[in-house]
Image (tube, rainbow, N blue to C red):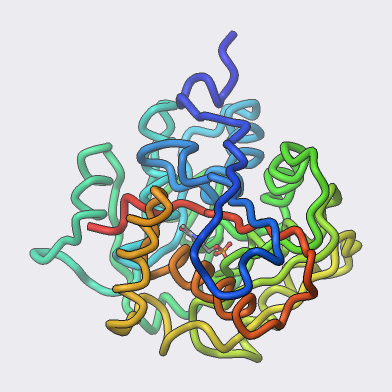
Length: 298
Ligand SMILES: *Cc1c(COP(=O)(O)O)cnc(C)c1O
């Protein structure tokens, strides 16, 4: 029987690629990128990492109908809808706000893949993590399995351990974007050849994000220490100033790797800033996790 990755045409292990940008002080470091953006053309890299274990369990248990939460541009909803479509699992997306008559490209895609779309008012959407609200939605829509927003839950951590398992050289620091927190929480609870993780918050709200990650980790052991930097979000989620947009375009051209301003561009910008300001010890081996998200660049 085909594995889930084979059924979905997932390319793992993703490549580890050395880059040599023309930044100040760059010669003092060895910089690599973990190319999770190449895992799949539609399924965004870290969304696959977070969903792989959950979908494995769901298919084993014969789950017939999955539900999840997201905004109108959510990479998570997009990836999950595509996976469910390919695997023949019914899927309902609970979307924040009402886009009927004004669908985003992402919503059009998932409708094509047979997803059922249910719009929630912003007030209702606020209850997306409350178990009573979630179980009532599941009951009303006959959903077997509800996945939280962003796919971020402790069940997603196994996929992040797989990611670290693919890295067989030592790195002092790994940089990763942080939004709903599942990626960094999963990396922190996993163990491998990475000594430290630096998370780059892509949205505003320091205490909120720090708590989100700490809550996801809960009482699970932190095996790879992490810290989260909050000075690179550029004003908030999906906010990009002209400088960041130019930086993404220039870096895409110079390095031959695609960068977009929502996630990977902010992390690369942070990396450049830390190197140029000498914030990282000389000789450090650095690894940037490119989480993908390129299908959202349109
Ligand atoms: C969702 C997403 C993230 C953020 O990951 P979290 O686990 O939500 O913190 C980063 N990069 C890309 C491309 C994403 O789609």
